[in-house]
Length: 354
Image (cartoon, rainbow, N blue to C red):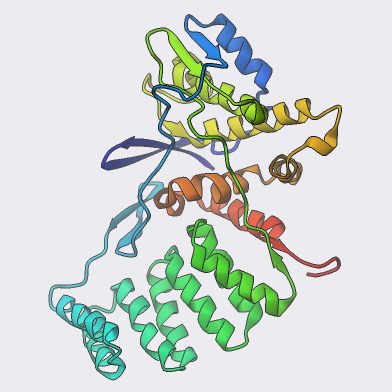
């Protein structure tokens, strides 16, 4: 697997790939980050008064539109503009206009004309499938959605729409597969979560949407040689997470020791994996005398780590909602982890269920 690093410089998004999305060595605990801080030339103000004057802005990226296509780039992936051929574009635009006016036969004609001129335009197949779907011809709709997926299997909306069509056709197992794939490529997709929940009511399982909710405004921007970390008493279980965040953001030598090159800070999956683990170990330490005080979120993360699916949780609960445009660019083994996480922890079957 590869490391994904995200640099945000509004309005641009940069994605860099290196080695080691997952690795074998033990993950560090809050004690290690506290030790790094103790040796640092910087002064970390743990318990700084809230609200902080200049809190760090958390990772946030644009959603991925269907008009961006995933393409091979070296040994990784990139997203590139996906535009219809000039002659086909007016037909697709007219089709969308007619569909909005609920003139379905007329819209179907325009979609067909556009696709005859440009059969490799995936969004055209995706949107054209809505016409037979609204007419109740779910087989024809499914065919259109799958043609879009043949051109780009990372189109989350095409997976979700295919799942909706399969649900209408009573093919519940196939629908589940498509809803899961939609969530792998777009973990914050409310429509896919809702569809999976509806399917669960029919198929006899429940859906547990993952939660990741660190308190806002906790880590401050460096001011001279001072780095403020402010935590309300109720948020103390998150201290390990923000000790990790503070070190990663402000200690270039530590980042380099973890295999990240360069002096400039950039969010990385390696950082986030370490910080999630630091949160968990710190929370477990606080609750060791009274395990009942362990929060549901920490209890869930503990089960995830024990199952070896921390990377899957990171993608589905953390990176996906924060930076959805980055998810389709992850290596296939990382996306496989996301799918395993969803099937193991998001879909909750009765005891003995498959």
